[in-house]
Every structure is written in structure tokens, then in C-alpha cells.
Length: 460
Image (cartoon, rainbow, N blue to C red):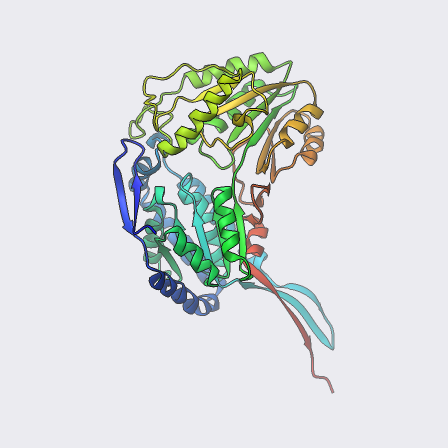
């Protein structure tokens, strides 16, 4: 059991922040406060809940000058990219805008004898377990619609981004959301599992590893607690022969390397039609050779360290194994590569699906590029994965893209773009990427339960 959580900064390996975890009794008390506060929060008018949530979002935005360097210290993203507030605000704003429609009763019918309808009722207490890679945006995906729908929320953030939940709670409380309605907690793994197993929550939303998702489902087994998960990914890009080559290279390589490759829907493998393959690889190498690896607090740095030396070690291992099996590396070691968290971004060719770098989640700045000769070959390779979050297709032919997309086992199909979360669409996955869906109208439906009304009128 861990008594103290420590955020180790990838900048220099120092301890950036520590927080003591709650005991089981303290954690149970926090969950009980959330449950006690839920009915009164749900009884508030929807418009009032929306206004309070959006005021909390604005309060987070007011902290952005502090948040950006804090994120660099905690997880290594360069300050030049300005943080996450644009996406944070976009997602919350969209969910606020569609709330009245998404949560409106479904009218089934009314006549002289009966009135029938289905209401959307809050789940109750929603437990959000958020990851470190986009700590604000991933959290708001569930926090905003859960609160708007009338749930209370308990947030547990990743140790690597230890201070994010505190900042969100401070901002939301300053906007007028009651302290028991939105709570940030520090928990170790055992207490987290025990809380879920005790039935403390009505719904659990987890973003993280496949192993973590399995632990959540095991803890919830037999409690009938709903669990939504977004887990691993190995998202492919497919460049067809009529693609806009420059746009495809720019977007797919950015999707592979941005945030040091630590993106939920980052591009981890690319399949290029043989007619464009050589030119694609040449342009991709030129782009990555233009990156500056370095301290994320330096405004000139375009790619920072990975969030942890442990994560970087896994990427190095995948690259080394691939090279031993015949892969070709195209990027020479960069000066700042320290063999630890600072890792040279890498492009690999002559790769196959026998290599872990093309099968296992890398979650780092490496991408393998393979030549293909047909849609059939590309579809088979894209589907040759245990994961399914997004797939990015590049062609001018919309009908062909839709036909290919229909056959790809994935949660989202992108055409001529990648690595973006549209809050109007359901964020979901298949296979070992998990189950459930966030954002969009479907996100509201997952954070509520249907309640049917079959009302017989008294007639004389």
C-alpha cells in the first residue's frame, strides 16, 4: 500500500509534487458525501448546472499561465504548445450546448387515457479515473457532462499529473459548485479497487492501460456498477494512391510525434500505397529531423521528454528489437537524447507485424511505415491488431474512404485528418481499446439511466 504519491518530473528526475493518499475510511467518507449531495444537485435546474460548470471551466482557463509550465514539469509537454484549454473548453461547451436536447424526455405518446415517456435520470455518483497524457481534456470529457446531467463526481487523477485534479476542484468550487458535488481525491490502487468493489459509485469511467481497465472491471464485478473504458491503442494511417501527399505526411507524422507520441489516438503505424511510399518516407524523415528535442520549459523545444523513464524504456526496447529483426531507423540520435526520458523520435521502415513495434502499444515517438499495394492489403494490416480506437484514411474519394472505413475495426474513422476528438461524435473503441462511449449525445446517455413512465389517467 502506498502512503504518499510522488510526481517525478521527466525534466530532471526530481520529485515535483507529493500528496498523501486517503485511508479507506476517508475514501468511503468522501464517496458518502458525494452520494448525500447528489439529489440536491440533480434537483437544481439544468440551466443552473450548465452555468456553474461553464463558470468552472472558465476558472480553469484563468489559471492557464500557471498550468502550462506546471504540465511541462509534470509530464514533459513543451510550453510552446500552450496547454489544453482550447480543447478543454471546446468539449465542455459542446456538451453544455447539447444538454437540453440530449437529456430531454423521449415522448412515446399521450392520449385521453395514457401518458408515456422515458426520462434520463442521473447515474448517481460518477467516479472518473483520468490519465496523465492529456490530463485536463481527458478529465473534462466525463466531468462536464456528468455534472451537467445531475451526477456528483469523484475525480482521481494519475500520479504523473498529481496537481491537475486539485486545480480543477479549486476552479469549480470557486465558480460555485459545492465541494461535495465535485471532489478530487488521492488514492492508491488497493483503495481504488476496494471502493469500487464496495459499491461506492454508480458509474466508473477509466482511461488508461488495458491492465488498468481489467482491474476496474474485476473490482466492479458483481456490483452492477457501470464501467466505461478507453484503454490501449495502435492507431493506423492509410495513404491511398490519390492522397494529398504533403497533407498526409504533415498530419500523420504530427499525429505520431506530438506530445512525444503520448496521445490516446496518436498514429503508431502507417501504410502507404507503393506509388507514394518513397516520397512519403523522405518527407517524413525531413519533418522529424527538423524537431528540437530538449527541455520542455525552453520555448524553442518542439519535442520534450517522455513522461517517465519507464515509458521511454519500453519504446527503446521496441525499437531495439525491431532493428535486430531487420528494421531500418531513419533518424540519427539527437544531442539531447540521454538514454532515459529524453528519447530521439524515430521513423522505422522495413518493419513487419512480427515486430512488437507494429503490434504492441508504443505510446511514444516512434512510427513504423509499411508499403502496401491495395485496399485489401491495407485493411488486413489495419485490422491485425488487438486494439481499435481510430484509423486515419487519406484519399480524395469519399465513397471509397467510407467503404474502406466500414471494414476497419475501429471506434472512429478519420478521412484526411487524424488525432482529433470531435465532441459531437461518440469517443469510443472496440476490442482491447475498451467499451462505452464519451461525449456526444451518447456520452450523456451513458452517464444517465432510462426511467420509463406509463401513466394512466383517471377518467370518469
